[in-house]
Length: 232
Ligand SMILES: Nc1ccn([C@@H]2O[C@H](COP(=O)(O)OP(=O)(O)OP(=O)(O)O)[C@@H](O)[C@H]2O)c(=O)n1
Ligand SMILES: C[C@](O)(CO)[C@H](O)COP(=O)(O)O
Image (cartoon, rainbow, N blue to C red; front, side):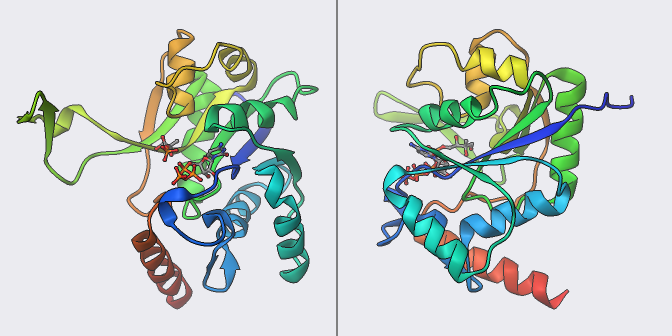
């Protein structure tokens, strides 16, 4: 089926503190292959569609860090900066507010710390959301999993589960309405917010390279991926 044509937007959330990374700077500003993580991520979106408006959500205290980095790296990808909130939910909400003049379209919400998103993933996620309203990128599990309950654990069928990534793409009016719900601790991503609102989520295939930089060893992987990309 051909996707209906909608204007594309992206809200790139980088408003967190990166506590699990245990670095002196929030992880979105750490350098991999000489360039801050967030710039790698934004470049991927810009390469996919240079006309797409990019909203970048940052911690209020780090806007000056970002401005200095942009100067230092002569970073010219056009974007609008929005201040983040105390939770990812609040940060996404603030990012969406920056698009309040836009009537319709498909918006991707993407973690600023997932710098290995690629064109195939973006194409699939935007295209599926254009057709079905909500598309979320995921991969199957490579490890066995066990359910833990009351001090014991039991094997469960891993084929029944998926690991969820970003981008998570939605028709803009749907995501806006979903984010007007009260926040819940169960909202760990945008799919959970939209699903609570009553809309079905379509899964699209992600990639094992599309990692979220969360803990220090992820930086080693990220450097290796970039080195490999440079060689090919
Ligand atoms: N208040 C917040 C919290 C998170 N995020 C963003 O959401 C993405 C995924 O979150 P996570 O990996 O948990 O980032 P942090 O909250 O920064 O990390 P940690 O949980 O280790 O502190 C990141 O790009 C992060 O910057 C955000 O925009 N605003
Ligand atoms: C949105 C997300 O990256 C999908 O995997 C994830 O849910 C973010 O979770 P975190 O607790 O903020 O790392």
